Image 1 (cartoon, rainbow, N blue to C red):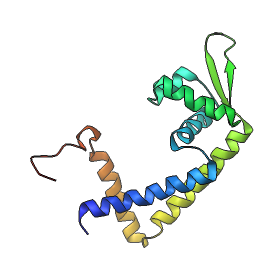
Image 2: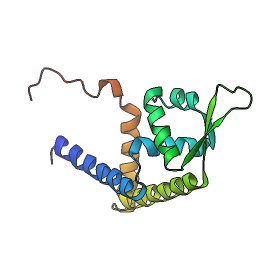
Image 3: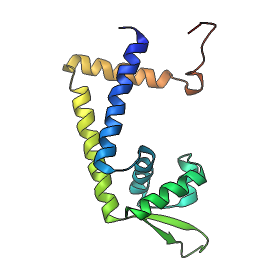
Image 4: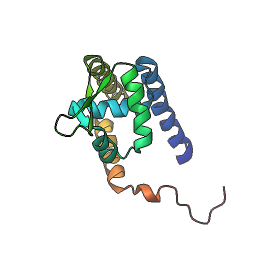
Length: 147
């Protein structure tokens, strides 16, 4: 199989994961990503979320609005600086993230478990090497080739 077909089949597997987890959580991937980040910190200032995770403030406002509306987080004014708004994960939000983490673990176990032990270790090593050597800003550069 050529590299482009192989790459697209791998992308399809991860798109399936994304679709499956959307159906189990009813959250868009970017919303779940943000909820997970808040979960790991339990409470964060909104601007810290935007800066640390490179989410534009206007995008983050929409995400936070949706997560609040669904009861996964709450906005809380910071007592030290009343202008600062923090987001705090709720018990419902914690449950959802725990479910998501459980699904991620199952996915990883079954994804890598499709290979026998020796090949699995080799594949993981190759993936680590690939990720260490990828320059994201160069991924879409192409030489003088035609389509």
